[in-house]
Image 1 (cartoon, one colour):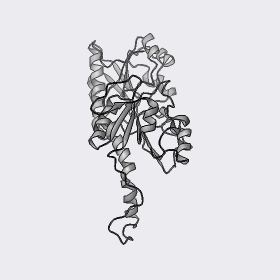
Image 2 (tube, rainbow, N blue to C red; image 1 turned 30 degrees about the vertical axis):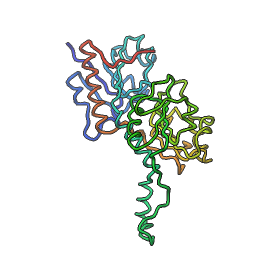
Image 3 (tube, helix red, strand yellow; image 1 turned 90 degrees about the vertical axis):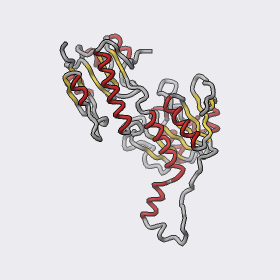
Image 4 (spheres, rainbow, N blue to C red; image 1 turned 135 degrees about the horizontal axis):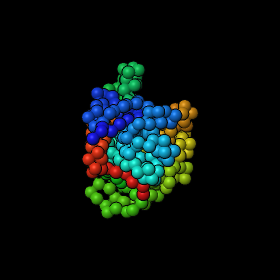
Length: 321
């Protein structure tokens, strides 16, 4: 059987820390590109039977220009960049990598939360600047240190990542409430509430729902006004869940205390993004998913997905709903 032509369209930032796509060499003739712009797509993938991608947009126009293509492997869980209806019309199989980053994202949620409550970096900065050395006291602080035990964490969405966050939160004494469209039976870690109650009762709101027409900008001027002034917003889901100008205004006017974001609507952001430069908005560059262990799991599953497909037994397929 002739080996398939496999093309990786956007290998960065998947490959660093010693990780590679070398295992794909055994499955076909492999070509790897660090990035692929829309204008480069046909040139990069014109001979491809199999495409591996993360962010490159693929739809009817692109599929029509790639007659050899039979399979697209998404190196993520979400497939927002792929037109699934167009893929079906062209007989192209789409697979993704579910649940590879659950532990990594949950850990990052906790890191963002503790950044707010313990102010570790800020206090270190003050020590390094000589502030502690100038004090007559053995202990001092310039920002409040908040104890999490007894506070309420609200999870918008209750999939695998949110459930992992709930388990961690319970271990440190947080009360956890959660909302998803269809009520779930209360488990050992979270209690279902409706969306307005989630916003009104939570000291911390963490976003874990998918980005859909219904959830697009679900955090907006109206919903922000219903949150506690002391509350903290965390987003490791999708940037589009938040109306960024509305959040920036709410932070400036102290409608909520702070926001901790790992995702933005546009990535990388434009220089004039209204959230950049605000002292009460901490932003990390979409790294919650990217632990070395998570990326190893991802790359292994990408290879396994291709092996199953080539053996006529595809797994982790994503179909038009």
